[in-house]
Length: 169
Image (tube, rainbow, N blue to C red; front, side):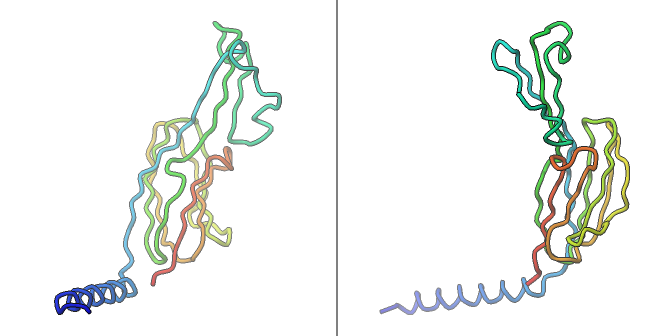
Protein backbone atom coordinates (compact mmCIF):
# COMPACT_ATOMS: atom_id res chain seq x y z
CA UNK A 1 0.00 0.00 0.00
CA UNK A 2 1.31 3.46 -0.95
CA UNK A 3 1.94 6.05 1.67
CA UNK A 4 0.43 9.49 1.38
CA UNK A 5 3.88 10.91 0.47
CA UNK A 6 4.31 8.35 -2.34
CA UNK A 7 0.81 9.13 -3.63
CA UNK A 8 1.48 12.89 -3.59
CA UNK A 9 4.86 12.39 -5.33
CA UNK A 10 3.30 10.21 -8.03
CA UNK A 11 0.49 12.74 -8.53
CA UNK A 12 2.98 15.63 -8.77
CA UNK A 13 5.10 13.73 -11.30
CA UNK A 14 1.98 12.97 -13.35
CA UNK A 15 0.94 16.63 -13.34
CA UNK A 16 4.44 17.70 -14.39
CA UNK A 17 4.41 15.22 -17.28
CA UNK A 18 0.99 16.43 -18.43
CA UNK A 19 2.15 20.05 -18.17
CA UNK A 20 5.30 19.28 -20.19
CA UNK A 21 3.21 17.53 -22.85
CA UNK A 22 0.78 20.47 -23.05
CA UNK A 23 3.68 22.91 -23.31
CA UNK A 24 5.31 20.83 -26.06
CA UNK A 25 2.06 20.87 -28.04
CA UNK A 26 1.92 24.65 -27.83
CA UNK A 27 5.64 25.27 -28.14
CA UNK A 28 6.65 28.34 -30.05
CA UNK A 29 8.85 27.91 -33.13
CA UNK A 30 12.44 28.84 -32.48
CA UNK A 31 15.59 29.64 -34.45
CA UNK A 32 18.42 27.12 -34.55
CA UNK A 33 21.83 28.56 -35.43
CA UNK A 34 24.00 25.70 -36.62
CA UNK A 35 27.71 26.27 -37.18
CA UNK A 36 29.07 24.05 -39.93
CA UNK A 37 32.36 23.48 -41.67
CA UNK A 38 33.10 22.29 -45.20
CA UNK A 39 36.16 20.08 -45.03
CA UNK A 40 38.20 17.67 -47.08
CA UNK A 41 39.37 14.58 -45.24
CA UNK A 42 42.62 13.13 -46.55
CA UNK A 43 44.45 9.90 -46.05
CA UNK A 44 47.80 8.88 -47.49
CA UNK A 45 50.09 5.89 -47.40
CA UNK A 46 52.72 4.23 -49.57
CA UNK A 47 52.62 1.22 -51.86
CA UNK A 48 55.03 -0.45 -49.42
CA UNK A 49 52.35 -0.41 -46.71
CA UNK A 50 49.18 -0.87 -48.76
CA UNK A 51 48.41 -1.52 -52.41
CA UNK A 52 46.40 1.33 -53.99
CA UNK A 53 42.71 0.61 -54.65
CA UNK A 54 41.92 -1.42 -57.75
CA UNK A 55 38.98 0.89 -58.56
CA UNK A 56 39.61 4.61 -58.82
CA UNK A 57 37.59 6.23 -55.96
CA UNK A 58 36.69 9.09 -58.35
CA UNK A 59 34.64 6.53 -60.30
CA UNK A 60 32.64 5.69 -57.16
CA UNK A 61 31.58 9.23 -56.18
CA UNK A 62 32.07 12.86 -57.17
CA UNK A 63 32.90 13.48 -53.51
CA UNK A 64 36.01 11.28 -53.59
CA UNK A 65 39.44 12.10 -54.94
CA UNK A 66 42.46 9.92 -55.62
CA UNK A 67 46.08 10.69 -56.36
CA UNK A 68 48.00 7.61 -57.44
CA UNK A 69 51.66 6.88 -56.71
CA UNK A 70 54.03 9.43 -58.27
CA UNK A 71 51.24 12.06 -58.39
CA UNK A 72 50.43 12.40 -54.68
CA UNK A 73 53.95 13.50 -53.73
CA UNK A 74 56.71 14.17 -56.28
CA UNK A 75 59.34 13.64 -53.58
CA UNK A 76 57.92 10.22 -52.68
CA UNK A 77 56.87 8.29 -55.82
CA UNK A 78 55.50 5.43 -53.68
CA UNK A 79 52.97 7.61 -51.84
CA UNK A 80 49.29 7.62 -52.82
CA UNK A 81 46.36 9.58 -51.39
CA UNK A 82 42.57 9.52 -51.11
CA UNK A 83 40.22 12.25 -49.94
CA UNK A 84 36.55 13.00 -49.44
CA UNK A 85 34.59 16.23 -49.01
CA UNK A 86 31.89 16.64 -46.37
CA UNK A 87 29.86 19.11 -44.35
CA UNK A 88 30.19 18.80 -40.61
CA UNK A 89 27.81 18.16 -38.91
CA UNK A 90 26.20 15.80 -41.38
CA UNK A 91 22.87 15.47 -39.57
CA UNK A 92 20.63 17.96 -37.73
CA UNK A 93 17.14 17.62 -36.24
CA UNK A 94 14.63 20.48 -35.87
CA UNK A 95 10.90 20.84 -35.29
CA UNK A 96 8.40 21.84 -37.98
CA UNK A 97 8.01 25.62 -38.13
CA UNK A 98 11.47 26.34 -36.70
CA UNK A 99 13.89 28.62 -38.50
CA UNK A 100 17.16 26.97 -39.47
CA UNK A 101 20.11 29.34 -39.73
CA UNK A 102 23.29 27.79 -41.09
CA UNK A 103 26.62 29.53 -40.61
CA UNK A 104 29.04 27.63 -42.83
CA UNK A 105 32.81 28.17 -43.04
CA UNK A 106 34.54 26.73 -46.10
CA UNK A 107 37.93 25.25 -45.22
CA UNK A 108 38.66 23.08 -48.24
CA UNK A 109 37.70 23.24 -51.88
CA UNK A 110 38.01 26.40 -53.92
CA UNK A 111 34.37 26.36 -55.01
CA UNK A 112 31.19 24.60 -53.92
CA UNK A 113 27.85 25.01 -55.70
CA UNK A 114 25.28 24.42 -52.97
CA UNK A 115 21.55 24.26 -52.50
CA UNK A 116 19.11 23.21 -49.83
CA UNK A 117 16.39 20.94 -51.16
CA UNK A 118 13.15 20.57 -49.21
CA UNK A 119 11.50 17.13 -48.75
CA UNK A 120 9.81 17.55 -52.16
CA UNK A 121 13.12 18.33 -53.89
CA UNK A 122 12.34 22.04 -54.31
CA UNK A 123 14.90 24.71 -53.45
CA UNK A 124 14.59 26.03 -49.90
CA UNK A 125 17.44 28.47 -50.69
CA UNK A 126 18.67 29.73 -54.03
CA UNK A 127 21.54 27.78 -55.58
CA UNK A 128 24.72 29.65 -54.73
CA UNK A 129 28.52 29.36 -54.89
CA UNK A 130 30.61 29.14 -51.74
CA UNK A 131 34.39 29.63 -51.80
CA UNK A 132 37.26 28.61 -49.56
CA UNK A 133 38.17 30.82 -46.62
CA UNK A 134 34.78 32.49 -46.40
CA UNK A 135 31.78 32.21 -44.10
CA UNK A 136 28.25 32.01 -45.47
CA UNK A 137 24.91 32.47 -43.72
CA UNK A 138 21.67 31.03 -45.06
CA UNK A 139 18.35 30.44 -43.38
CA UNK A 140 14.95 28.97 -44.09
CA UNK A 141 11.82 27.99 -42.21
CA UNK A 142 11.38 24.23 -41.92
CA UNK A 143 7.74 24.20 -43.05
CA UNK A 144 7.58 20.64 -44.36
CA UNK A 145 8.01 17.39 -42.45
CA UNK A 146 10.80 15.15 -43.66
CA UNK A 147 14.39 15.61 -44.77
CA UNK A 148 15.88 18.79 -46.14
CA UNK A 149 19.25 18.29 -47.82
CA UNK A 150 22.19 20.73 -47.93
CA UNK A 151 24.02 19.52 -51.04
CA UNK A 152 27.22 20.49 -52.81
CA UNK A 153 26.59 19.47 -56.42
CA UNK A 154 30.31 19.14 -57.15
CA UNK A 155 30.94 16.71 -54.26
CA UNK A 156 27.64 14.90 -53.64
CA UNK A 157 26.71 12.50 -52.21
CA UNK A 158 29.48 12.68 -49.59
CA UNK A 159 29.13 16.45 -49.15
CA UNK A 160 25.55 16.46 -47.92
CA UNK A 161 23.91 17.35 -44.63
CA UNK A 162 20.46 16.04 -43.74
CA UNK A 163 18.18 18.34 -41.75
CA UNK A 164 15.37 16.18 -40.38
CA UNK A 165 12.15 18.03 -39.58
CA UNK A 166 9.96 16.39 -36.95
CA UNK A 167 6.33 17.30 -36.22
CA UNK A 168 5.53 19.87 -33.57
CA UNK A 169 3.34 18.12 -31.02
